[in-house]
Amino acid sequence: MSVVVVDLDGTLSADPSFYKALLRGLLREGYQVDVLTGNPHGREALAELGFTQGAEFSKVVTVPLKHIGATKVAYMRLVGATHIIDNRDKTIKLARRAGFTALHHLSPKGS
Image 1 (tube, rainbow, N blue to C red):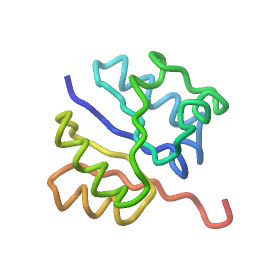
Image 2: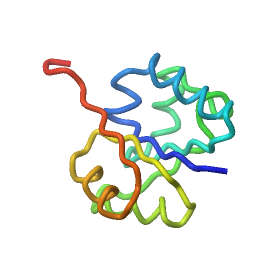
Image 3: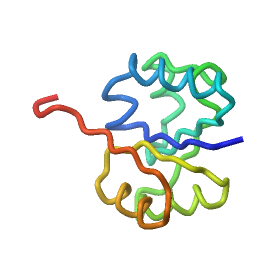
Image 4: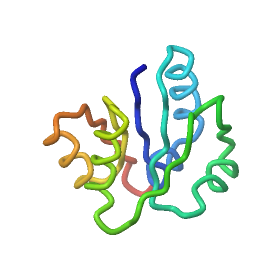
């Protein structure tokens, strides 16, 4: 099973309806989708955005904000993830440098 990790704040929260559809499709195709966030209230934030565990994501993992990019990459190695979707430049650079496919969410200016 392939694992995809996705950021919450600034990524899933930036376009919930798009990401709900995308994540549902990934789960349907057999991917594990882990939400990695520095938000200690990530589970509640996902519920407020209408995301449901099992329907759009597999689990929520809270990582420390300090060195968040490096921690996300370490988590990816630990679980054998293949892809990350994130809005932070540094996280994307670290993930790509580590050999992962990193998809950079960029919101339009003013959003």
